[in-house]
Image (cartoon, rainbow, N blue to C red):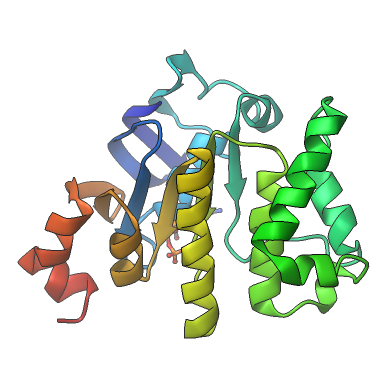
Length: 235
Ligand code: ATP
């Protein structure tokens, strides 16, 4: 479904991604783990078109997307939930959700998706007329995921959904991520520093260091890999 081949992305003279190659099949949950500054966010930004790779190729359903603008990429079915949520704090929960669907014309289906996300996160239904900025961190993460789902993506990119949240909320959010994948067949690319949780939720994983993929395997094998255990699982 998604194929990155030899992607090189720079910020000025700094090379953040070095010959990065990643493949994601339809229906999978794939995780990308790595330390601070490894290049995880840059990988997502390169896929969603926010940052343009200097060289290499990114294919979505066989079509090159590395030259497309981010809006066009969203309409193709690829949507990113950015790190730190970035919901619209002044807008209500419902208005935030509407923004997620603003590129869609199929209004009847949008209504169904609204019901679906309210069912996934009942707290958002309760809070629907409340300003996004007044929600708790966990609720804002739920809203950010729901807003992305309102675009009805076939591939959902999640950037550190666990960041800054309490363990119980993180558990709840990861259960929902797995549910979205199972119920809708939505493919998920999950970037996480919480390697233990990410690998326990994913089918396969990639490990990244300094802009380079150093390991890729099934999530189960990575969980029992000695290097991964030492460097990322604190075991
Ligand atoms: P974290 O987990 O801390 O978010 P990350 O793995 O997502 O880290 P990136 O944010 O992709 O890593 O950063 C990769 C490298 O690119 C780092 O060295 C970072 O300092 C650099 N970088 C990221 N964004 C910019 C930018 N806007 N301008 C210059 N350098 C940047």
